[in-house]
Image (cartoon, rainbow, N blue to C red; front, side, top):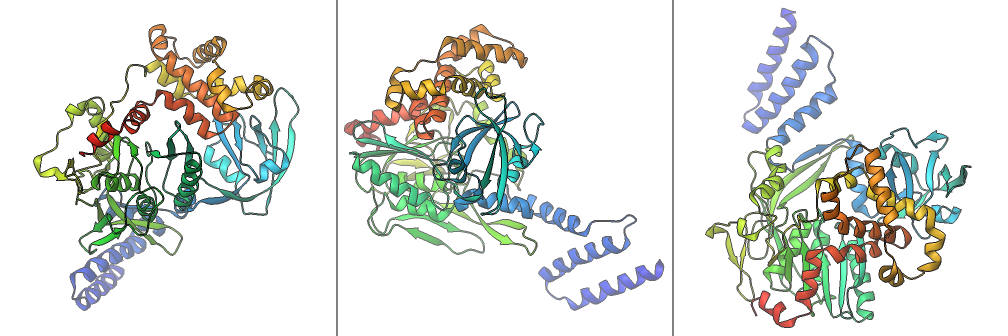
Length: 529
């Protein structure tokens, strides 16, 4: 043993003496530590796991967004942004351990063999997936697979006790990033993006052209809950609103020189009133777009202060398919505002509690609770309005969180999936009748009223799930619950856009956006004109 130690120490001395520069010494130090543990530690060790843990430990000391992903996590992260994957072409919800088909993607593999909304998938390739508490990710892995391969599914349909089997040939499935695009009124269009994916710019331009053909003069762009995505897509979309040669965003870091992105040729919506909706979950690419619109006084930003994610990650692929996402620079808006909120030595726990801290300070309920130091004041580039930096984009018009109708009872019903379930149950029993009675969504929105029996079913299901009925809280939340059930039925009966046309009736930011955008005097006043 002493001979082994002597040999190891001698090797270390040779290596150390040969290394003159400090960075190389540090790298050798890590290598020697791994070598020593691998060859001398008392118990067997997994070298690959040691390396992964060391990388994770280093990244945790840097900032909240530098991270390591194993090969599987890397694949799962890139799929939603790349715009497509191979699968069977359905949207689904997991309710009470059962997969409910919400929508069959038109032209996709499932539609071709006859799957319909409302079907419940019970088995995949002779494996039972219903009632066995299988993870949603595991179910998705069974349904997804290479294009051209076959998967067998068995479904329950309506009240038929017999399982129906379908053999589906998987195909390329487009993943859209646009939840809705519709005319909010005769001259105002509404577009909601849920992320900035590879296909988002094309989706946006296509929706914009359709709405303009329907008479759109003004636009509400909804980025509420949009956590970001590709930087180049945010730049492309901002380009649609800005004249040529306007700075959109720049990045800069200790080892990264300033890199600017500017608007190019004429965009699709450089004229007309524009309102951008944001909230505390709008992050990264959403903040870049909103910041550019605000700094150039191109539109009014409505909602609540955005998340504050302004760090640029460079993906560094590893030989085994894993990846390091390393922060290399910061995002800055055209006025020079840093989007990134404060963090200390990569302390992820404090960082994640930021939204809770905002709530506790009263920031989500009152703009008066938000205080910026004078050093964080900036002036917009056209009308010289005051805007603030130091973390996220502060909207021009603040909309507080509505706490009047959100109760603990309502949250419990939603968290256990019961609001969704009663909507699905209603359609299970009445789909044919609903299709005949409301062939057009406009008829449904105007004429359909959620029956009291459905709301009572919700209360009863809640009791079965040990959610104690609270009459006072139920009455406070009843208008919201009713609207949510109606919106969910609309989604399953028509599409996601119809869901938002119903639910936006209760969206205060959306309603305020309509008020501002339809009043030229108010709109111009908000922009300092």
